[in-house]
Length: 373
Ligand SMILES: [Zn+2]
Image (cartoon, rainbow, N blue to C red; front, side, top):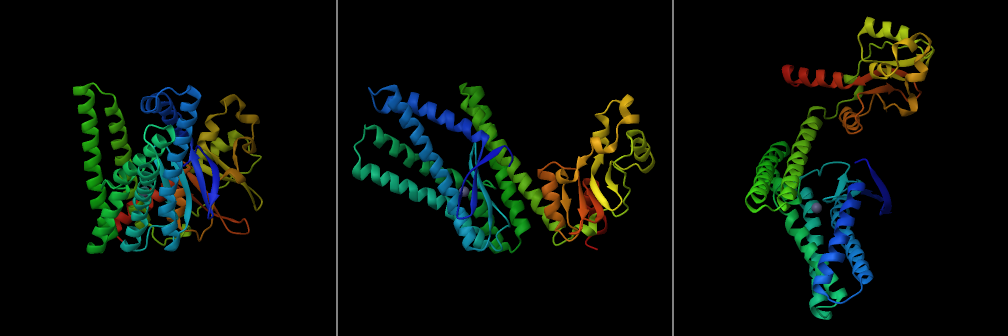
């Protein structure tokens, strides 16, 4: 996820905060400082309400993070590295480097999150009931944290893939049906039905009760629906390209252009070869990549005296893949960074091919027509 900043590292896992999380931090602090705390505990100064609001929000933040660490530590234990944990508007996500190898591992990793939240709810709730006096600001803060953790545990158990409940459900179908892809399809279908139900309920709440909280439900339902669909297509994608190397899919019929060619010459090149991009090469050195899009941004009257080197994307900013890299990984990276093409180069910097989304689409089409051969 882009638009996030790194906060710290725990056991080698980078913890990142997405900017959308700052919005929720602000909203939470305000509603606690101006709504909840003044209602629960009377006659304190507004500074005290604000400090309590912000500290409680930080505790909630810590709770979400602990939930994700719960997943992450069990995953690490099962030999699955964690790329990073990102906290965003709806909570957190721990990005695993690989899918769990078997249904039991997925069940353990997934269950660890809600169990962690439940444990936090029991601990904070226990402290509240055993040691604290209701009606004091610290007590109400702790009680609030206990309830949020309980809600987090329960909400995450809703069986809408990719929520934890949906993943637990998938791991059970996967265990009995022995087919991960089919289990995912079933879990995603149920998740989609539930998210449409949530959206429908949101509309009903808005139209019949005039309550704008319905919007939140619609938004949430839509997010879950989208997340379910995209994790399913990613999985299908990974299955299609499983174990395939970049060199199998890239185009090797390379047409290059020199960095000191003018844009007029480049235009001729585009017209003649009809490719959308050319690697910029001089001698045996690759300098970058130039696309039709780069060219469009320069007014036509400047073409005769503008050279390719001025409009190309330099090599260090271009996506570069190795011929032996996993094709699915490279294409996922291209999709997430919204890059249309990657240069394929050897360790010694020799250009051997070009990988484009077009190559990928063509490959998927062929795969569908011709089958696994
Ligand atoms: Zn979770």
